[in-house]
Each structure stands twice: as structure tokens, then as C-alpha cells.
Length: 168
Image 1 (tube, rainbow, N blue to C red):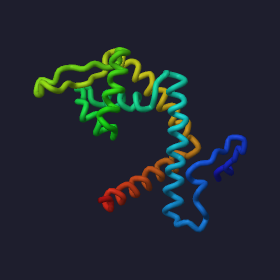
Image 2: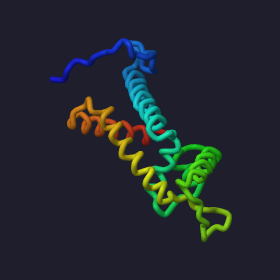
Image 3: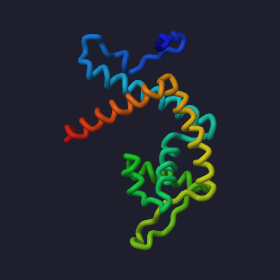
């Protein structure tokens, strides 16, 4: 039997879920709870990235994409994967390049383009950040048992599959 949830009134914040009423449709209440959980976890991750590594979540996300694509990515590919504008990507790449964490290499197939790669320093820096990021997320979700995490993953996959089917 799970322990009852402890509400720490000294840390309670207004969140998206508080706007839901008990007579609102269950789907709306689920969506608000998912949004609230996501925002709460993201708030902690953003804060810890800033405190521990003096970096931001968008910079971390960009480096994560580059780590997953060792062949490098063009700017438009990064923009698409991160779901942000090209201008946002350019600003972040410029900053990371000045810090020696990424480099731009010519794209042989297109003289107007180049590929962004992590440098060796960028690879080491990202590996350190990713290791701690994983520990943070594991800790934030450690209130769920392994079975509960598996069930949540299954249910969210089902919800995602349906959303993809009905989305325009």
C-alpha cells in the first residue's frame, strides 16, 4: 500500500491543475495534471542546469541532439528536431561555438550549408550534464514503483498514439 501523499503547504504553488474544477471533463483534468507535472519537473531541471552547469535547457537540448547524431546536423535539421525557429538555433550555436563546445564544418553536398558537431570538449561537457540530468529525472520520478512507471509509460504511449491518429 502506498504512503499517503504529503502536501507541504509551505511549498505549494499555483499551477495549471488548480484551475480545474471537479465538474470539468476528466480529459481536461488529465491534461492539466500532465501539463503541471511536466512544468514542475522542467522547472527543477532548468534550475539545476543553471546552478550546476551555468547553462540552459535549450542549450542542453541542442547538445543532446548533436550527441545523438555524431555525423552532425545542419541548422535546419536542428531547428526541426528542437521545434524552434532557425534564429533560436543560430543564437545557441553561436554561443556554444564561442565556448568551444560545438563546431561548424562545411557540408560537401551543399556549399551554402554546414554541419554542427560537438567538439571533444563539448562531448565531455555534455556527458557530465547528461549523467546528472538522468539522476535528477530518476529522483523526481522515484515516487513511483517500477510497475507504476511501466504502467504510466504504457498508458501515455496509448494516449500519444490516439492523439497522433486524431491530430490534423
